[in-house]
Length: 208
Ligand code: SF4
Image: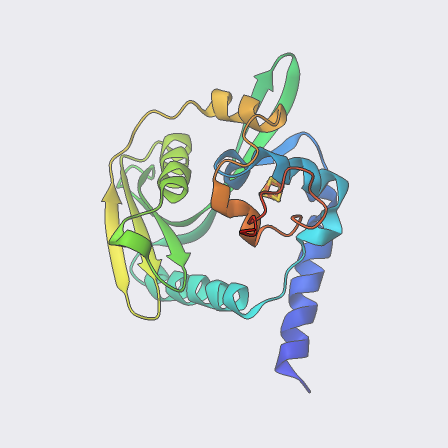
């Protein structure tokens, strides 16, 4: 028996089950709206390159699962699926996302949304812009008025309260489907699964 092999098979099974959705051009994920728009085009053309099995990702999954099950005892709901349809230039797109933790009020409506982020460090000790955008989109879609970004790093366990702000979700969908943010952030290419075959990849120039 190998636990690593078992974990790999579970991740591979989950990925295979999601493959049809990953290649459906009508589906857009909230994470697509806050990252390089060309990643979505590459995913639609080369879906298998999206599969990753790396220690930081496994660690991230474990932290999410662990916090979800611990906090469920205190009334938090973990991995809340979100879905909303948008008509853009006559075509229907389904925006999908998954909020890590949600707490509902007495009326049953979502009140607080928490997005968990794991990483090696927390540069400048500030929440990162694309994480703030992602959380605000979840808050808007769920109608919640409080949000927190919880960072878990080897050195830190720190949360930031994020004020709600009106997000132009339709505008972000347009940027994504018409590929207008390639890349959204310069650093994205360094970590991108498609960088070796992407014509827009930013490469570090060598000094002559
Ligand atoms: S390599 Fe860079 S430009 Fe190309 S898809 Fe990835 S992040 Fe976007």
